[in-house]
Length: 579
Image (cartoon, rainbow, N blue to C red; front, side):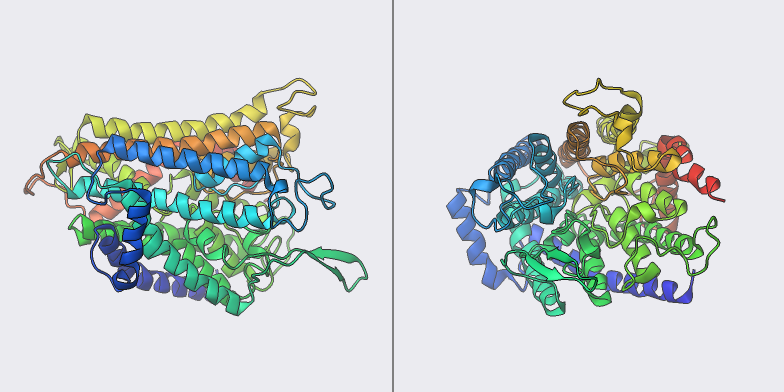
């Protein structure tokens, strides 16, 4: 760990802290319909949207109606995006003729299973990509598909998070707000303004925005190379801020057209974590317990900072098997170096964003362990846009329940008694998602499909691994962990564009998304009906360091008990193997 790496990490954390608190307070005002500095220009537009869509903003929904609205919204988005992907060859803004009878060399056909995987990926805010964007999707699919889905999936996740927070803030009611009002306000007041300003900044730094056909250039060696263009700057901010992360280009934020300078690299990392880091403060304001919101933020920062320091140290130590100095620069951009690449990798996996500026398959085993821990701890280290605070609240309920068992007292949280129904919903979310990760990771190693089978295309499933041994197992664990955690990043050593992986990864994304938000809404509905209890001398404080360390211990305990054997067979075994 060098002083340069430590300084870069501290600067990034300082900027994140400076952004998170005011943004959290602003979002709380937006969600509650309060006045903000954007109210005067945007309030007429908001009311026009309600009138045009036939939405009554005064109408409140219970948790089942809220969940039904969320699911129907997602279903419509899925079919729209799937149809767009399958029919892009008949639609405009396709200068490279993707999907036509005469596509350019190297183009990837959008098969039904790949279209399903892609549509599910962006519906669930995962952004898993089994394809290269610049050789598969038309400009229209990128804009009307990927970019729009980034807005809608992020808004849906934020809406569910707000509904869960209202479950703690309200009492004696079964009403959690209006899903259609929530997604309108989130998109109009939060996502669109930041995306617009972010796009202008990125354009000023060299990120491209055009509709030109791909260009042909002659390289220094004299070879002819195709250079992809497109409307990149308009997609980049929302794909980062929404936790979608799906890149216009295959190499994502390592591409100079997406992330040209160290300054854009810093801003892109801040865009990824801005809303997830602000949500604890939003929770504190809306639940009228700002100190508890700060405690959750401190727990997230401690986990994040620890991951950054370990990853930077591991990468700068280099590969002991090679015995060369300078650290491990394999798979990293020279314009960013080890420190910025290491922090970006932790930002990506801790945030459920999935954007990358380096090849995770080239990281050292200890760094891979940090990335996999971030994925498999359940989006509690900032997490996704909205889904992060949901996951953190679920693990807090487990912490409160354990603390109550230790002292022989009925657990309570923010004045609400935590009973069997809430804990059952928490266990459903935690156990099912963990089981999906492990079971799906085992199947490619166990299932031997007949040659020529549709699912297999004549090759064993294990042949899709780029590496044998522990590293190959890590590739599979990472893939399904990324899918179920709705992250979307990959080690890239696994060839996932086959019917088997496209469909099973898609199923894992659906489980990870909807078997988290539906139990969360059920918990919100149950808590909103309860009366707030008075704080007594026996009430466990949830705003001090004791609670923070108990929460951290619970996170490590739950993650270790669930995934430690898999970690031992993957990155830990690989770490011992190369020494």
